[in-house]
Image (cartoon, rainbow, N blue to C red; front, side, top):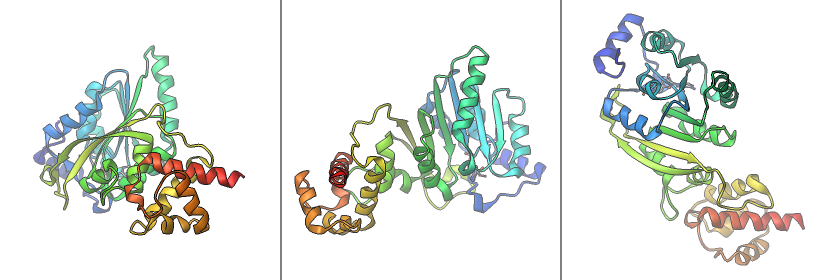
Length: 296
Ligand code: SAM
């Protein structure tokens, strides 16, 4: 059973009495080429564990399982579980979990799977998070994975193109913001491909894009005094009022403007610049300086 053709989706839905839940962002992929592109970008092999977010009817799951050592697919909609059991039932290296991804402890799953791999004399070398993400929670899913420091190596994920553009954006443009910085702080981000809206059933209103995010083994920027918490506070304050100068935007953190001016000048950043022109390095310089001053 190939669950990625329009006729198969219609047929499976009819047989299982499945009704799509609009509220769960259920747009199923119906294009084999795109599925192959996503799977190729993930570079799976027998030493890879895949955690899939929202398998739907198993379009990506089936192909991922052909290459990966194991696939754990987490689907919130219980009405899709019988469908997944039928489509993926005969495949041994797939585990389906009926749960909300936002309430799932992914690290716990990974720890258990590391043990399973080693108990069966295999090595687990890479963990890949895969998914055609439900659009209504794209950002919370990505931020949850980054903030909870999920022990993964790579994410290959599809989302609305507009969100993908924001994630890979570089300083200077309108799309560059706190989401770009959060993702690029922890990961190297790569734009894999644009996906037209026509390859989904039903067709969404916007185009999509696939990104590959590789978790950095070491962070290339030093976050010293104040740590990550202060760094992200500075980033958020900067972008909360992105049209204002840094001096005005950052003063909302409760720092006296004269002190702030001195801080910015001491790290060689013009106080009249706007947050959207600053690189991660520059934000790090500011937050490190604020942190050091607070320690005095
Ligand atoms: N992977 C399938 C495909 O590409 O055809 C389906 C992708 S569809 C865009 C998103 C899937 O995520 C749906 O199956 C939906 O039920 C599921 N989903 C929505 N919210 C979820 C959540 N909080 N946790 C887990 N799965 C969720």
